[in-house]
Amino acid sequence: MLTNAPLLVVQDVRAGYTPGSDILNGINFVVQPGELVAVIGGNGAGKSTLAKTIFGLLTPHSGTITFKGEQIGGLKSDRIVQKGMCYVPQISNVFKSLTIEENLEMGGFIRSNDLKQLKQKIYTMFPRLAERRKQRAGTLSGGERQMLAMGKALMLDPELLVLDEPSAALSPALVTDVLKQIRAINEIGTAIVLVEQNAKKALAMSDRAYVLDTGIVKHEGSGADLLKDPKVIETYLGVGGH
Image (cartoon, rainbow, N blue to C red):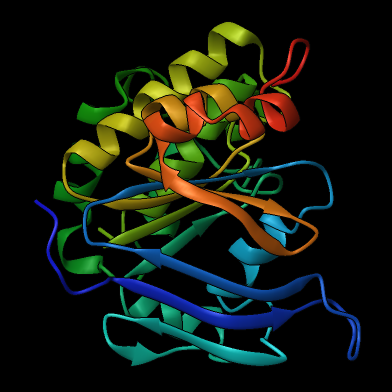
């Protein structure tokens, strides 16, 4: 159930990879507890930059980021993890030389007292991981690896999960599978920021969504409303697009 107190508030944030060169140009962005919020837009729109800035991998040049009422802009990502947020990057998101089980244990390193219970929760959510628990992550398919990356993050039982392009480079069948799992994660109460290239599917499954263009919010609203917005359809959901 959603509440009136926002979980995450990004206000007037400017950020980029070099001083004086902003990719985010005054972003305002809100996530309520339990929401699934999609972020879509063309290449270079600032989607991944927003995800990295929220999670502390980039420091805002200006503006504020508040998580659970506490200012976190500029905090290192390890501090942000401890406050209840996890991030799954698009690439390099598992330890390839370790088994599935070892990856999950690494993911839950600060929850050592209840690792067994947490692993079982992940295996119940992702039965395919349970079947292959002794298999090295580097031998998994793209879809299985993405599920492991999400499972590893969920070992910390976060209140907010930030997913950066989880369907990138996956086959259409695997995209459907991975997005179905993301919806299931959300349905157990975890709020999700979904940065996604597959705009139609992301909008269809989201509570709300933001469309970015050159580092600003061009459109925002419910996923259902944006799917019907003529300007969004023309620019981002046209024939041949994602």
